Image 1 (tube, rainbow, N blue to C red):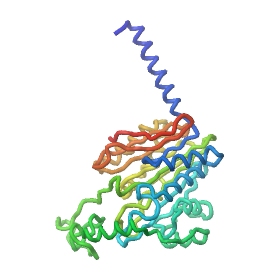
Image 2: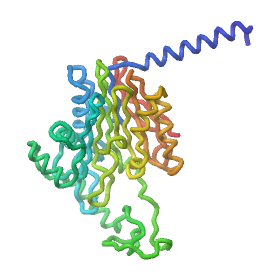
Image 3: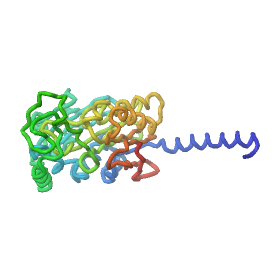
Image 4: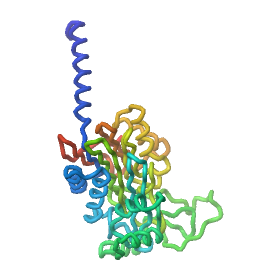
Length: 346
């Protein structure tokens, strides 16, 4: 070790380097999205580069995944419910105006993120669900078409052949671990006979695209799109279309978007909490980690992850280590890079 003066200089150099590294990470415009959905990131980045707004970039990026059926968990033809039907959840939020549009349990309409934007721009409501959301979409000019494919039919048939396993029922009779329904509630909730563990979501059955866009003027938007948990109960709506849960944006602070087991994550409003941490001056990586750790106190085996970006374009991500999720991949585009990045789960 060198003399005291040398040590002081070295510490000062490290501090300066850390600040320079942070400044390098703070770049706008910025696009960041969950998972290795590179095409969605490129589409959103191209939209910004051609002069589109942050909202346009979010819509275009999520739309790309809806058409490409990303991982079979976004868009039509994936994640059939207990009746074999694919339904969609989506949300978009304008961080400048705090306006939100969302759809849940959307039926027969492929362009879920665009319908969500229509809810925001052509109604005073925030969230429309089910058949009424589909009727709204048709009135707005969206095409009504079957979301079923041979793949989704096959997934549903195999599930029925496997005695409806896995499913999301508990405290019912007959035993949902061994038998299909219909089910009735059991009277003695203390009984162990038909108590089952929570449905285990994983990377193969429960993804969401969450996408954050910041344009060159610092305007922030965020959006989500998913076909939800596979074999879900009809009518189930997850966290994705819920402002503050699936995603949240405020151009004065930043934005965040979550993915994973929405039935758990939505109870903690993780996206809102992450943005509030960043508003307090906490860096995006730490903000994401704090949100995940807060949920882990109650659900240590949580399958979930979150991406965060503050108003200057600094970004980060965090995930909860669980079966099937040791690392979390996400996409980043800014003036210096366009790449797939990885974070180790905590």
